[in-house]
Length: 245
Image 1 (cartoon, helix red, strand yellow):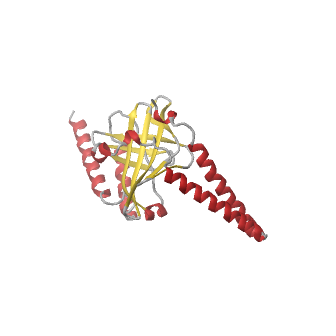
Image 2: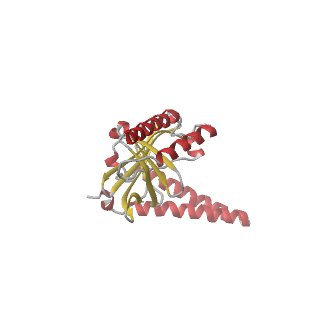
Image 3: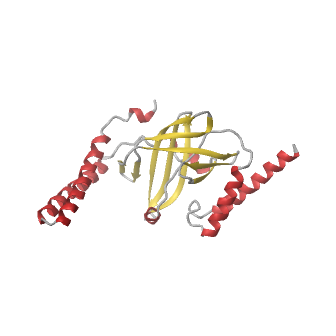
């Protein structure tokens, strides 16, 4: 019993150190390389520690250009039902306009391992004030819970990415049950239509130039216009399957 209690105390201390080190660092993205290595080492310690059973968690939203445009204010993941999960990345566009990217998907256990699941996400939604867009492909990801206690959940993606989630807090007010249920708004339709028309016009103009380089660019613009039209068409499909009703 004393050994088990000591292990719990050690894990609690390690969790506290991880949270302190990544506080105010945009989920660890702004940490210096040496500090990131230290956090990774602490996470590996926790992965080897005894833990409780539970459902996996996951989430992702990181690129250098993305961080320049989107100041991330929250990364949330919720298991609403045994087979339904939502991910949400809240941000401020250019540091001032609030919005979020959301995913909604079904959870499928992999084998007999309760700690590893495959999540099949529907097409993502992008929400800004007055603007809702559903654009982009559906996706799937494999997630494993590597550590779980009353305070945090550690996850690892199929590509080795690590995630640290704390329980409750802002996530309780993040509206996770509504994530992934929004349709493209009128403003969203307008933006897609304008973008598609612009790409089509640009494609025609480049094609008329006649050079090989110009016509290759014209084909690229034409494909982009077609992709935007396809995105609009697919978004007209009923969302009943997303609601999980």
